[in-house]
Length: 102
Image 1 (tube, rainbow, N blue to C red):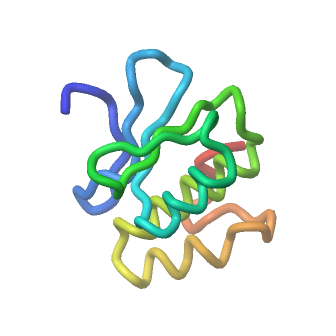
Image 2 (cartoon, one colour):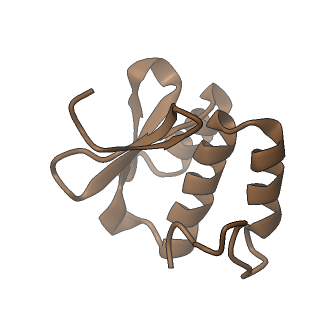
């Protein structure tokens, strides 16, 4: 793609556009629809309805953390996805001791 990305097991779940003010995240068509209906100024449809562009200046740290974890879970194997989901909202770091957003 020519831009930095985040991967789990060689699968991309987030890309970082050159603007430095947004992130593109893997999502589901239903998730995308909900985000667009909730706040079309913050979220935009990308790449055929399976990716969402997010304006980082318009979301809270907690919201972007949840969106990142969900994108990770869509690309990760089931066991890793289950471990990641169990840490959201718990305040505990995910396995490996590192938090994606702190």
